[in-house]
Length: 434
Image: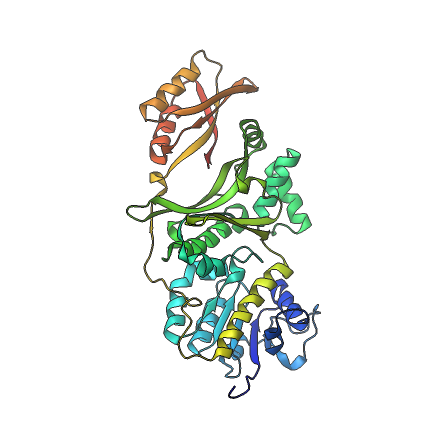
């Protein structure tokens, strides 16, 4: 057998929810994979050492000097669970430079600085593992890198933000307004005091950039990801969705727009999802990621998208993979664990997107207004699947249309023309349809 394998020393950066959950899991290794018993929690970096904690650690393991952890020659694996862009980025890069493997839950740092981080890791011959960065405890990064990588992936669609899914689910079941549900979600701890990253879709954009890069084998420039949040989704739209056979979900979508020239569409926006679609029934804080490819067809990953236990499960599974890699002690990096792509994917601008649309118009009660709408749409090659006129809002009639597939740019030009019609008071909302 050769020399005995000596345990692996972890340096953990951050002891918040995820850090604490990870320590708890590692301290309770009975009934889990036996390799976990060879992991030693060696140093833990915290902001305030005297804070009461849910885990017991020797005082000697706790430090406020995070740089000392990534520079400590005894540390084998650095686990970054502090979040934020800096100092996380610098600490990850320093750990890599020192030849340490990294496990991170930091989707924001990876989506923005992934190119720099993975280039450095490939050069140093170390791995950067990020299962916990997308979908909480749901194993989706590893399957995309390994089990599904033999497929030609053509679509990755997900509900990857629990906060917005929780808000939309409650709006749907209670008929409440966005602002009321948001306030309640904040009170219950499902939404942050500053909910911007979640409700404006930025968190989901970070995650779909990571999923797209793995699914389509190329880097994604975060600036290319179109992003629209859920603040403008009203209970009126949710009611219309219900009547028309849809539910509204904040979807993160990456798919081939044009297979021939490898153009991808990568976007986050509230979407009308047909009730029969597998993602329509994913409610509350749950996440789900649907992957379509050839020859597999459809696969869906479903589970808790956040929480101490779920995220700790993903972080620790990455640690387990690294312990196995260190134990096999090969000088050559395992190509299934390392990052293989260096080129950037071509992402199509949103104006080129071809999709169906839902639009709601408030109109003055003029005769022939539906005909005028139809004419404007026709002028721009937009064909309508359904037109509904149901209610009044005060003196204004409400007209709802759902289009067939249309190029976004053409649809927007039609809307510009419609806005100028004398009979149109306003365009109350526009949503894309899956």
